[in-house]
Image 1 (tube, rainbow, N blue to C red):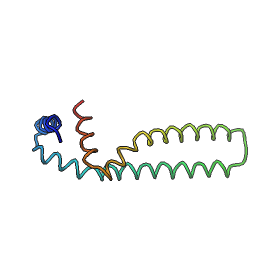
Image 2: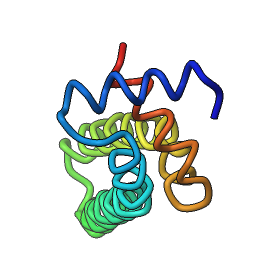
Image 3: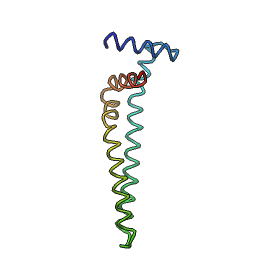
Length: 110
């Protein structure tokens, strides 16, 4: 870490009332937990969309079927974009916790 980042961590730790080393270690431990939580949420949402998809397919064609497909498509697209934009955080939490922790610190300082 360079001096500027170390200074930001010290300021944040003073604001929180903890040692900067303790804050950094806590963030490194939190990275995989946060990533796992996000991954579980992604899986739950996509399982719900799959079940909803199957219920629409099983449904007899009626006048509400096109509306159901439209609503499903819009919500699925929205969820896909949201999770796609957050994918770097999820992967960083598992594979590069230092980057995740640094990003969290810089986000909290803004």
